[in-house]
Amino acid sequence: MAKKYDMVLYDEESFATTGSPRELFLFQTRVGSTTAKGEANTNCPYAGVVDASEKMTIHGMALDYDPDISVADLQNLIEDSFLEIKVKDTRVFHGPLRALPQLAAFQGHFLQASAADQQMVGLAGNVYMLRNKIEVGPGDRYQVRLVQATNLVAAADVRIMLLVDIEEAGG
Image (cartoon, rainbow, N blue to C red; front, side):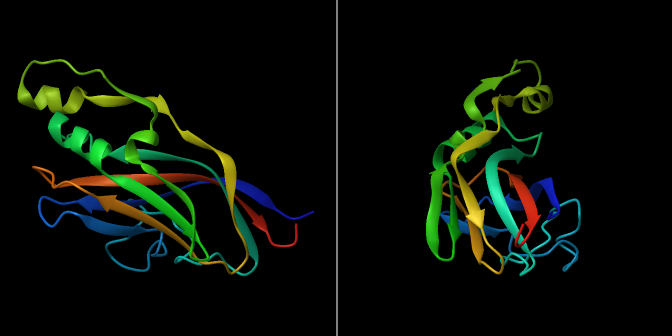
């Protein structure tokens, strides 16, 4: 029987204060292959192509961001930006970032001092579970494109997480 395991793949990029719209391509750099992509930024075992000995199934995805992001920047981030996933150059997912924290709504926000305000805002919701799982076969190319549509007031890191099964090919 082929080995199979669950994994939460994550990759991080920075949303900028200028240059929007911008395309950011995630999961294209293998963890540790550059000084900018250490384990704090990504755990991606592949560089945009699944190993020939494995296959990957994406079940869901989620969004994470800097905890000190301003309320206005958070709103711009989730309202105006979107995510696209392609497998072998075929679009298999396209949707706004607002969809990723399922049933997204602001929570935990209270007005006191600016610093407290920035650290207390968050999104309610769960992981976005796909109705149709995304299959990425052995040796298949995949691309996760994140489009920042609006400039932020202060740069903020955005992390996309993919809930996947990784299985030995042929299993």
